Image (tube, rainbow, N blue to C red):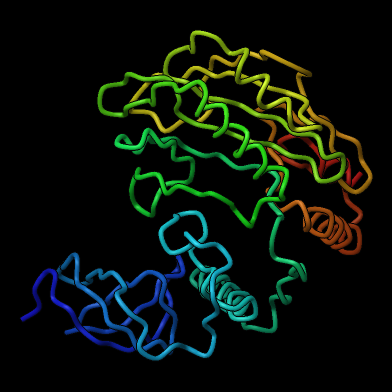
Length: 324
């Protein structure tokens, strides 16, 4: 008879759609984050349901041949990167097989129908946008900035995020320095009170332009010290404030958006096409592969059918322009 908090040893045999390791346990599917097929692990059961159960990893007794050491020291806690413990080759194979299995639910396909996934040789420092949240370690008055832990609103403090370029990490460091000198209240999702809520960084890899959007639950008394701190970043171009005080909403950037310093937008280039990015502009988040993505897609379209194309829900329209 399985019980909550029971500790077991089990071999991971499969991988779920979110990357969690899967195993069969007493006729149920067991989900264990941060594990891979081939891992022999010791884990603790934390939730039991009729057809499935969940556990947290305690130890990897025998690692899978596909297991690697995560580059980020908080990768196992942070909800942003679920698969840093899996080799790049194994990740691509898993995603290829997952896409095939999903499509096969609707149309007849075999593996040869789908072309291999195109990847970049350097899988780090590729992000051009990140949205962080705040919390406070009250005893030390230490500001935590990071993403939420998986399936929670618990902020995992991130001293350095390796999927961001160094300049975006410098922005976080500057905000921490500002907070040490000018502490502010942190937004409380239960009471709806407090100031600092979310922190968005946008970055152009082609021009190095930086934009910051600080989302607050209530206005700060004075934004000048924060602006002074963030302007230490040489290519800082835009600083916005957005007020979002609805505790039941997960919207990171609220309807109220105000430019308090700099230019309304930052400059970027996609396939040599100049563009302007505002706080709400959509852009593919992997800056190292966006040119390859758009070029590959436009080549396929041009090669297959010269008929007119309608690009619906086109965002900033960059893919439309590339195809044109």
